[in-house]
Image (cartoon, rainbow over all chains, first blue to last red; front, side):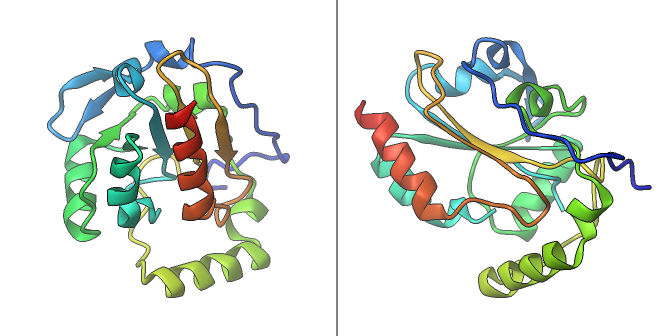
Length: 53
Length: 133
């Protein structure tokens, strides 16, 4: 139901941002951005929301 | 998500604050307007970054269990946040990571249920420490 997990999952944070760096997202104008750009020049607080709503 | 209310403090600490959500750029812009969020917003349509960040998909209880709903209502009332319609995978949970330019991750908070969000002051303290070290 609702695409929920059938069993409780654990969370698995990455040890480093190496894999995350290659992930690409779109900005609010639809331009593609590599996540690595966000912490290239200073620390970044990245907040993943459940959804925009 | 109320970190945007302390944006000036994060800026003063020399830390970038960015939000990633599901949906489309249109959804992000609508959210920006409706929630008065003055932050860079991004969308991840495949949820690849969620997976790589370690965020999980919740069970029904982790989304709609009584304790979860009660905590969520308390936070909504305290922060005066109105829940809108769900966009994207409805069971996807989120989290917060702080990433330094060297790729290290000195702070992680991955939501265990739909009401599980870190306090602003905890994230801010971690951000300041990341900027200093």
